[in-house]
Length: 183
Image 1 (cartoon, rainbow, N blue to C red):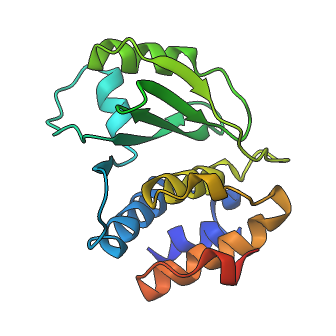
Image 2 (image 1 turned 60 degrees about the vertical axis):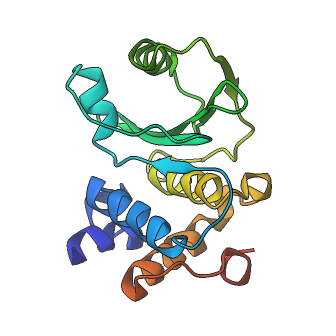
């Protein structure tokens, strides 16, 4: 795990986040908000979309409100972004720091879940390099899962602080205040 944590420090894998870091961070979010009230929100792990794409079966009880799916577009080096199905608003929301081509991903999700939801490409901070997309994706998941997406007020210049915050959260195994540590 230390090797994966080093991706947050930029000393391993050129700073590209691994599935292990993404999934550990998702687990931290789930554990930190176990006493949460409000609409049902689920986050799946980073392997979920690959199973959907290959049409493999994956049992999942759909939430009443949101299903958050981390997406890793295969390639060299690949690209992470967040897709959120909002069942209350009948929307498929995209949170993408590079504004990539996500039409194929949306088509697969619509087909698999038999959805006729409208697509909403959300206003989201833009990254200025090829390595920080995983961090941006984790922040989208964080804000969506904790239901404070209206506070997506970070910028690319904040990424070094966010990487440090994520590493500390993983080390402590708990979610810390974003406001007190980043902005």
